[in-house]
Length: 130
Image (cartoon, rainbow, N blue to C red):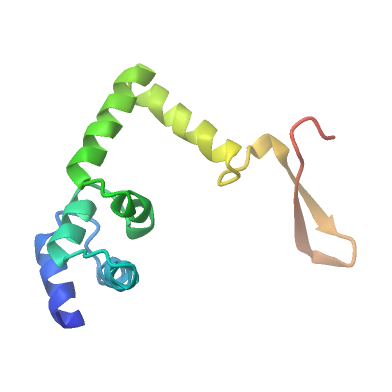
């Protein structure tokens, strides 16, 4: 399929996350997956986008042969187990902090660069470090 046809089909079918930039990201992912023998069509990509997933989020699930519908069911189950959406959001944030994706704001130090007062240096302390 030509890239323009893929992007048109994706943008027509995706209910959200359907900008040209995101469509291009999905197109690049289809090429990456194809190199590994995994087929992802524009319709498949649109289903993932409609489910609220960006290509980088969906890629590991696609490689594990998870469908967007199964991912949504797993998300719903995780929310129920956590005790609700607020509790699930707190778990996700905790996981992201643990994995280093997010940094606890209490651990961030902002200071003026001693060599250049127009610059700010940002340090991240380890938990328990002063």
